[in-house]
Length: 152
Image 1: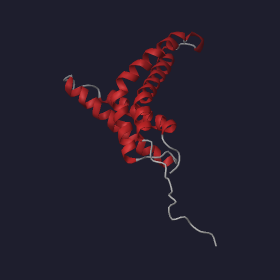
Image 2: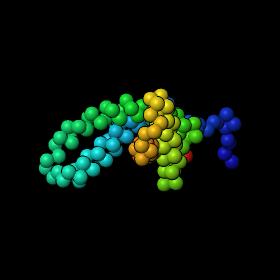
Image 3: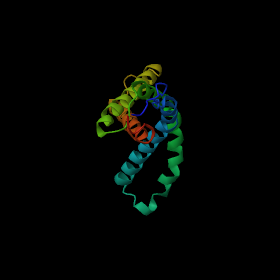
Image 4: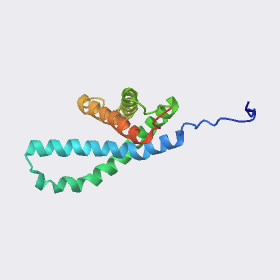
């Protein structure tokens, strides 16, 4: 018979809370800015009828959208990263996509409402507000795909 050491411990890797919050803060707004850039660039090229070979001005605008997305989405992305790390969400199945979308959507919604109340522009277009919130949800999914631990 083999002896079992009673002093042996099993180490369980802890959830990388700091990594999740930090990378969500760094990449969440950038991903949201890129999503917004592609939405506007594709929409304008279809609407105006710009051929693909003449789309260089859109490519030149991409860094501006990345910067605006980073600074504009920093707080909602940090809040999303904090909530995701609080719930210890793992990205191990497609079923985890919906909670990530809801968390990203709601954190973006909170900041949209906060800025609307602060600017006294409560009568703004709800369609654009919902699109910004959906952008936050999709950004949370894409960022979670890269950042979150894959298995439990």
